[in-house]
Length: 206
Image (cartoon, rainbow, N blue to C red; front, top):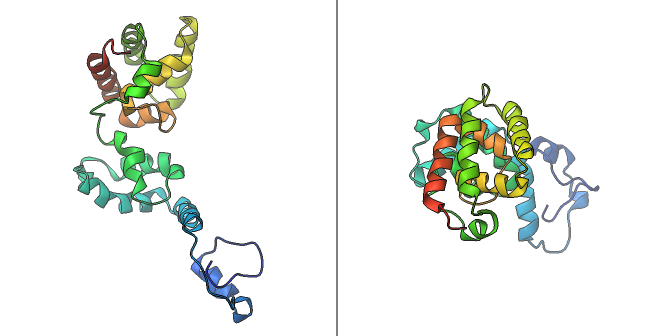
């Protein structure tokens, strides 16, 4: 808020609330100074209040500018994708960096993550994981996660290495929303294709 405050600690308000609460009594006599970090925080908070569908509509021109045809994806798909990452953004433009893997498979893989998480036995483990994923009767996040985690535990694999290598093949780096939310949205076929492509391209590079 620049040059005025409501007289309490309230910072996030709708236009209706601003109109209702405004009075000249709380206007500052000194010049207002814009704080960029505070403005970024405000924008983040307002974006969280926008529905996923509205945010998806704002994101579509960005997808198009990045060479992705938004009409190749359903409105529901785009809305679900932005809903999974909206908590990580401060501006609508941030959506591309945070969600691009929902719309295009990684063309390269982060070298630092390969060095840290891709081990000599990773290709064999991920190949076995593909077999587990193919057999899942239900590919939803809620159904897939316990099955995969149990498989990792039974085989005494290193959970962090397996799941981060898995994520690396899907996203291109070891970051992003919950991995099984990603797999549910991109689907079984795309998940398996990305794992197999990652195994082929990274190979024994770790």
